[in-house]
Image (cartoon, rainbow, N blue to C red; front, side, top):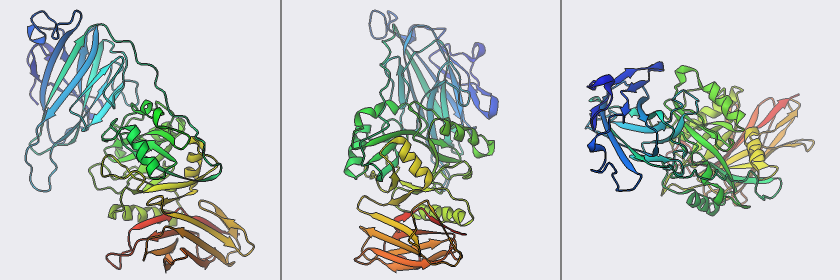
Length: 515
């Protein structure tokens, strides 16, 4: 990267090259943007760009190049003088042609204030990833994904995240604009959705816990997502924006007696994504680390302290940085099915079942990960048995695995194990029986696909398969000596035998214990 000229690399003119300094943890610090040397190019002839009585506008532009292999984050310091009422940042970068099979340039962006960029610190003011080319922050308002609040003087930081870098390098331009003048009155404290809805008492409730809106890289408003959730027959949803909590206050108006709205975040690291599900309002979880740094346990504990669940998302997704590399020791549940059923979901299901057979059980979930049209909210959805429709009860049910996953509200399952004395165990529960005593696995299905199959799966694999009949049910007998658990799948007809058809629904296990 080319060094800037002038004292200490400060920007005395309108456009400068950025100075690269290697900092802690391999991060890059770029020579600071200073407004200490304002000149006539910064504003109109009267020093006020918009002609207002109090306002002036100061602008600086920085260019630089990040090389292939650059660290995950670079920080451009911005020296804010006193009297700033609005900070606005825009950026652009080159997208050169690359050889087939080679990743091109992709650059994310965010903002930290004068409190600094320390991991887990209080300086976070917003993140938009690659979804926006500009953003602003004021005392009373901010671009979705960013946190409104005071613009105190001091060193702020524009965070650049080179997601992928082409062999030619990534050349970027960042423009920082300050509008001076008295700050607007601060915004009213955010209102958050209630933690309880009317519900139906102890019942099965349907939810989609991985959703994005305009507050990260989605294209729908919270109100639009809530309307689609109601149309899909859901009882609860969770807003999980990428790497920001700034949208938590946007959901209150969409909640109601018929729809519980949980809050959270999709923590999007470079070695996997995880849902911080159902956390306290205003909880921010940092994402700037990789699996090799052994930091994730700390943030998993933070999620739990904030009342949430740790849920690795789409663990075998094929996008860069999406596959889960942190292991499942800190997970409370795992998102086995993400969006329309695809081969990576089949791999996730097999990996989850393999861990289950080895004695490590993490309850499974399914969510839509819907961002924009034509993504369908509630495809799939997790159906959980809960004592009431509340944040605490839903999270308890998910944590206990009292749940199954279905492709839509049209599909319902009832799956139990019953011994010879009439004792019954349901999803996530355990039935203790003599080792050789017969146990009946019984599945009832509503809305099964025509021509599909029912499969019962144990730690030995698939031991029972039947075609879906008009009655929509199946029964099978086993023993605790032959099965440590039984779970059920409902699948569409196979399109490429002998591979199974896509899932229509599947359950968490019911466990058998010899005793």
